[in-house]
Image (cartoon, rainbow, N blue to C red):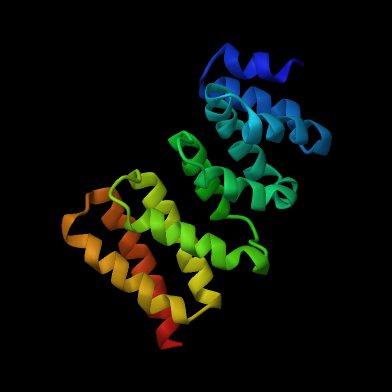
Length: 175
C-alpha cells in the first residue's frame, strides 16, 4: 500500500479505519504511519493523526516507542490541531513512562489553561492530568485550581469532563 497516497485519498472515518486495519498490530506498518505522522507535510500529518489514534487504541504497545517524539511533535509551532487532539487523546489511555510524566503534565496544564486550545484538547488534558495526579498527589490541588478557575466561563462539554475529574480527585483525597 502507498500509505501517503491512501492518507491523502480521502479524509473520512471510513478511510482512517481502513488504514488502521491495514496497519493492524504490525510494527513495521505502524512505523511507516508514524513516519508520516511525525515528519509528513502538514496535510499528511493532519490526516495521519486519525489512523494513529485508532491504531493506538487497538494496540497501545505500538505507541510506546514513539511517545516522546509524539509529545515533541504536538508542541511544535504551527502543528495542526488534529495532531494535538489525537496525541492527548492517546495519552489518556496509554501507560506514560515515568521519564515523560513531568513533560506531559506541563504540556497538558498549558493546553488546559489556554483559551486557544479546543474543548476536546482541554478535556483530554484534564483526563491525562487526573491520571497523573492519582500517582502524584501534589498535582491534585493545582489541577483543581485550574479547573475551578475555568468553570464559570466553560461550556457544557468542559463542565461535564471537569465534574468527572473533580469527583475523581475528591475520591482520591478522601481515601
